[in-house]
View 1 (cartoon, rainbow, N blue to C red):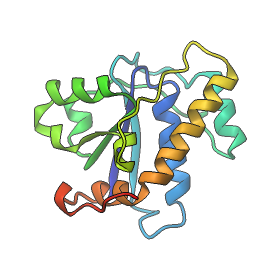
View 2: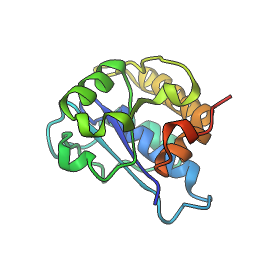
View 3: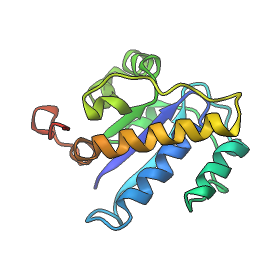
View 4: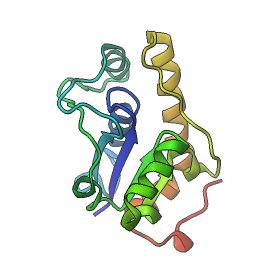
Length: 164
């Protein structure tokens, strides 16, 4: 079963958006009914809803973040995921250091497309800032989709498809 955990800082905007976008992308695919897609934050306060701007952006894409509640990363949360995708290099480095047993499964989202680029936090920010971040996330998901699928299925890095 493919599994992906998205990680940002507070789990209030970037990682929740990435999770609903990936769910939308895989909705009609081979793994649509079995793919586990979730999100968490490195410095999240448990139980908060996504920020209004993220909820609005999701709604503009026909998606719903209304039931999202933030949660903080932990070893137990990380353990079952084949792939952990972070929004920034600092998230990736922190997870690899704090949780070395899953280090080989932690990538920046942009890395799946062969690039190392941070997706900057739009909080606090405006609706246009959140829309910009959503476009970035969608683009990285599209460009890295083949490698995301391979890694989410638990394929070793050497066997994972190279993104164009």
